Length: 207
Image (cartoon, rainbow, N blue to C red; front, side):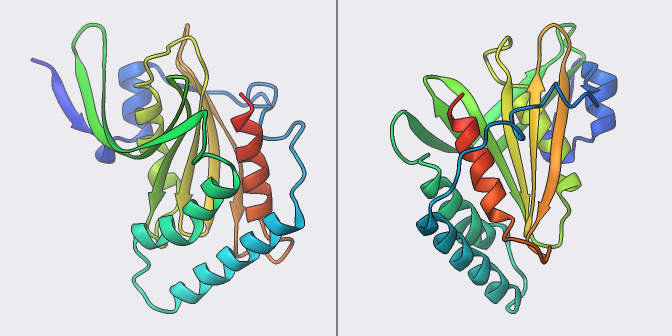
């Protein structure tokens, strides 16, 4: 009988052992988050500065739950990235399932947010409460991404854990492989890192 796991409980070790998932260290594998990123307008930057201020304001009223992170950070990024307009549309709380060919393991779960473009999964977003690290959501996100119906197409993902952001790329064929971007943190004192997150989102939208 097949073993069924909930995506929220899946670990990277599960994905490695059960599905042969491999991490790729070569920078050329996931070049899309670093190459040919578009510039932002001053309006974009002003909007993101307001979003960052809103996030830190809500940190003063704990607990900062997942839905608050979605409203203060995720929604502005998707709006400015153009993901609410054609050719994109959003499916939220989408049920997904992946299984091994030999019926050994089945993983089931629900996505927080799926962005679709011409039936291709462009970005999968899994947000977490502020006290969680991006590592807490990475294995869950990868499990979701592996359920993409287009096995020969790369899938891009984003984990949001409070004020931390991590992009990932997954290629399923012929062997499941993934790589991650640098981690972007709103606590960093340099330029608002939401700028870079939006630039990457806009770049991924071009694919």
